[in-house]
Length: 136
DNA sequence: GCCAACGTTGGC
DNA sequence: GCCAACGTTGGC
Image (cartoon, rainbow, N blue to C red; front, side, top):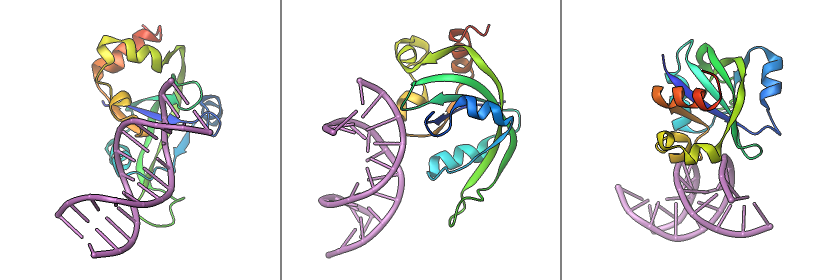
């Protein structure tokens, strides 16, 4: 089991919209590192959903419903998508501000590679984020 | 709206 | 293969 975090601007694609879709294709990734992360995702992997630009917080938890396949929205290049499905909205959103002050989250890829839209999360980071979200 | 970080492109 | 120029992302 692996853990990930994906970013979305709520103006364009919010958690609530995602949740209303039950399951959706995560398309439009045009960055090689992000693509490699998509390709490494396995069915059942847990994925945090982060609101960038507006909100700046982790709002929900999703899981990989279908492993990578070619991105139908790509006109050229071998870009891929995965299908994600929402599991639940977090009891308490975990803000970027909080993450920055958490000792256990100082090395999180969200901070280290702030421009990457799909980043891996370590198991202990996953656990700690759930703890901060009042999920255990 | 600005700027830092970083990826991509293109000239050499 | 290097590097300057440029574009994009995302936080502030």
